[in-house]
Length: 304
Image 1 (spheres, helix red, strand yellow):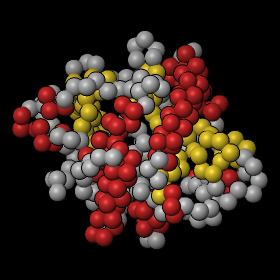
Image 2 (cartoon, one colour):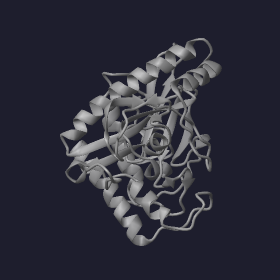
Image 3 (cartoon, rainbow, N blue to C red):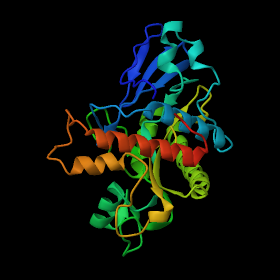
């Protein structure tokens, strides 16, 4: 098994950020090195136990999707070998778990696409008959497939805070506030691209016996105003993957993503604020297996 990485310690590049899972370093003025650790977050809180091989699986899956979906929208990839931008002694930290990407200006919202009524969307639907202000047919059951995928943006939460679902109008206003007059058009383009990306990915996944119930994309813009797909794409951290052969309405289906960990944490007396509880060895091992299986089934490659 590959060594675990909870946090990178690269000294040859300036670190410019640390997310829930990724450590980010500057490569000159126009590129970034993104190192995907084995950290796992749930309910927007970083858990104390890393998941073996998680960073490598996520990196390989994201690279697979970036390449497969590049005909829909440009993405952040540069093709530069991450091992070529760090010191020789640091190559082990980036091997198989890092990407060198373009440095782009992120849109201030997350682009969430839902194909099924589950998670926070199910709670919204039960309360209002709508998700993010989008009215839906009456009588839908938990995990029901929607008549068509919907775009339900969310605000980006800082560590320890929760994302908040917002309407498209609110998302557009946030983009205009951050990016000026062009922000509204970029928000509309992000919605269009996110729906197209989801449909293409869902079609591919269906051939592997996997349902993509919902997923989150992030977008950034370059100096010329061109929108790009950034961050990660269609991994178990950013998506809800269900095995098609065990899917049925009326329940929260078993999944290949971190929902397994969320379900375990829901059984505990925990307020969903830091510090998070430790995970039992069995939960860690089963979560790692779920990530590896999802990666193999979707890409056809052993990813760790």
